[in-house]
Image (cartoon, rainbow, N blue to C red; front, side, top):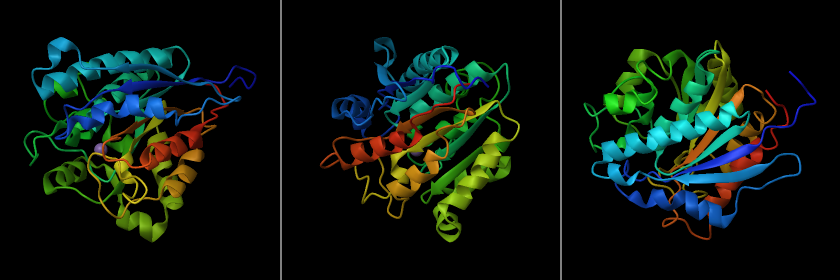
Length: 299
Ligand SMILES: [Mn+2]
């Protein structure tokens, strides 16, 4: 590791995904967060918006087509930011954008080893079309990344699963259906639900989560669904669920990653400006990003 090298820039990529959710308003989330200027450039670390990616015009006919096409664009962009030596921060959009984000990270790291992922969410997002009660694709991205579900969603970065169950865990779950829970249990993905977080404390749970995503991987990332936070602090999300994490405790956990060279990418999703008030949810997103900057150690 070269301590004198220039710090990684944190490059923000908006993903205007909305076709994966019943209310497409989350597609306006990235532009609203950019206007609200909640992500801060600092003297120690360059934090800058790159672009906001949208569904290509020829792919808007079905939600499946839209999610897959935006995912392909996003994967290319994320891989290119990583290959340029920088840190991609993807800002959604509904959580279906995760398929593109982590496919791109996988592509950039594939030669060095598998990718670890901490999925912080009130939900499991681990349905397939065979188990989903709602049919919404934002309830499926983690299953797709683990290689389960529609091939249009599982094959964005070629054949084979993008993530391995042993390198993935979830934190903050408190609303799920039997079919997705059964999938995660069958393939052996560790789920730290809110009951366990409250019993043991987020710090201890986060220790264990980090061990899972570090062991045998080339690097790891964090996917933050803002609905993991309590709706009292983050009302402006697609699917609020009471009883979530506090913004301060999640920021404290994330701040442990800021100098970690193995921490390679993050995403923050499901911001719905129409449900926010006084920009409190936008502000919470800013606090979570401030927690990981500056990333002063280059790879
Ligand atoms: Mn989610």
